[in-house]
Length: 287
Image: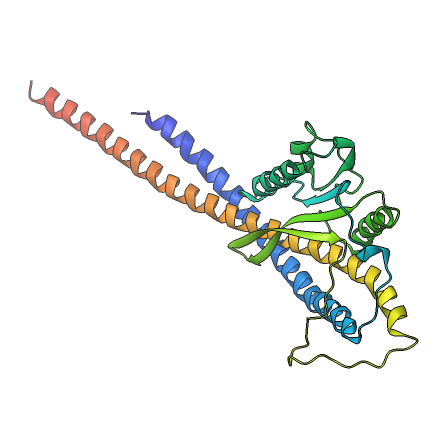
């Protein structure tokens, strides 16, 4: 059994850890609240913009855009979103594991035809030993901004229009709730549009378009792609803070449980020491 001095030292150490995890949980919870507001404000706009695009297709127009052209994926770009720091449970490991699985699917491609865009330092560190990375946008996940997301989207659109890449995929954690984040894989380019989506009443909306439906669709597609990238960035950011909030809450709970066990062990040790001293005194007085 450990000495009382050792147990007391461990109690002090656990108390210090408890203060840190509690503070980190409060910080993560505050950031999560802000991220929730940001994603909740953005999602309706993103969905409505997508709904307008889909609805316009009901007019039977032929879309002439380089961003909807489907090609055989011989050159692929993977944009994977993680965090810049740790202490967020299995968030980063989940993203890294899923990214490696997706990259394995493209193992037949030459490495020079596989473009990996890590958003987040942790996923970049994990992939750097095996793959060549494009790290120009690695740090944009810390404080998501529309301008940074739009720059990444435009860079990818430019490569796709020039036929330097044939497919762009997004890998990120979708924020469902504080306790649940879902690993998501989406095709960013080519943009997949159909004429089947309807409005909230289940009826295709009618629009009066000027100067023309074709011109409006031409302008909306790049805007929709930029908005999609920003929405994914916000979604991933909210998932990170949710994972960190849960991880710090669990760490705090574990520290409290350990502190109770150590206090119980310390008190038992003190009682044993006092009992032993009393027995020595009683034994000495009886001689």
